[in-house]
Image: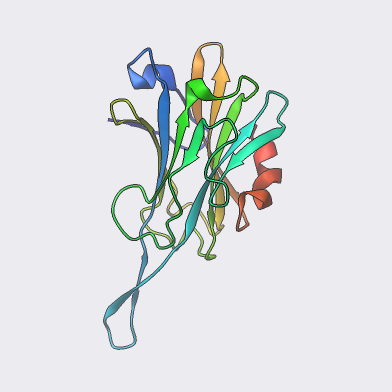
Length: 193
């Protein structure tokens, strides 16, 4: 069972994993299509294209790499985006970003996960949107952050992984923003590093 995080809360990934050898984590992003009543009373689904991105920062807060729908793998090979879901159809994680913590370049001190509504819907309209962090070794959900109902913005800085002396920590950020790609969120991200 995972730990449900609220905005600003943190959890040590070493403690949450219950395993001394936490090495690969997956950030999952899930959401549902929007169901609307049609002209003659029937229901129709409207696609939602949320995009998950992972930004890699050094200890001074400089962006050193990014993984998103236009670059599915980090230069060091430690971070991989599994593919772009354009609709939100299906159950579970619609997009995932897998991080090999041991494979990250030593200069990388923080990973920031963001989500953007490429199709423009905001989080009051999108149902069942969440992000979660999973230990790939045993599929244990270590942390979860619900996004639906969080406001009328169309982008959000979801969470941050930080490297410290005691291992990795996840912090739920939940900072509202506006934009279609991660580049639009860089000013908001810099306030949360």
